Length: 171
Image (tube, rainbow, N blue to C red; front, side, top):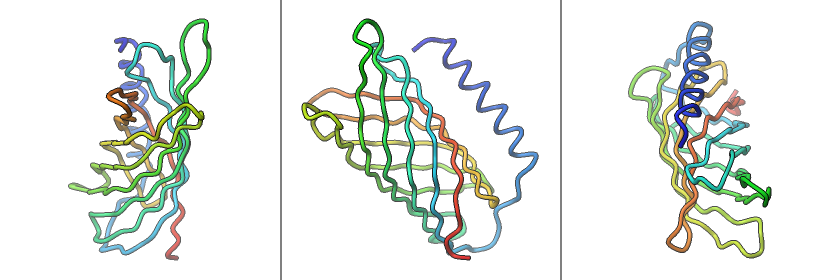
């Protein structure tokens, strides 16, 4: 992966986190809320044959405790090919996972699931996605994750920034 791309993502995350931390409300109480989030992901593929990845998702988040939430997400991810081919590879990932807040606002997440290929020649892939992020009571969720689609002894991964807004369904 190119050093410039990593530096660009790190700078973008630092700017967004700094701005959001200064303006966000704190997470408090022992919530049992349910939220529906709508997110946009921009990623850098880990395989040299691809330029970039872009995707969107709907995520249902159910709080079990104030610092542990369950996740269920459905989305779409598209990897754009480099070079003369200029094609793309798409997946519809369906994932379940956990989000744990070891300290206020900051979370560690993990998701597992299946990625259904959008091309008739693509097989269904196993998807795993560990990540970190910041969640706020005002609905904003900023996350950084590694996501990999594994199929037939091969894998296609990305480092992705997710920007999302969650609507509280419990109020």
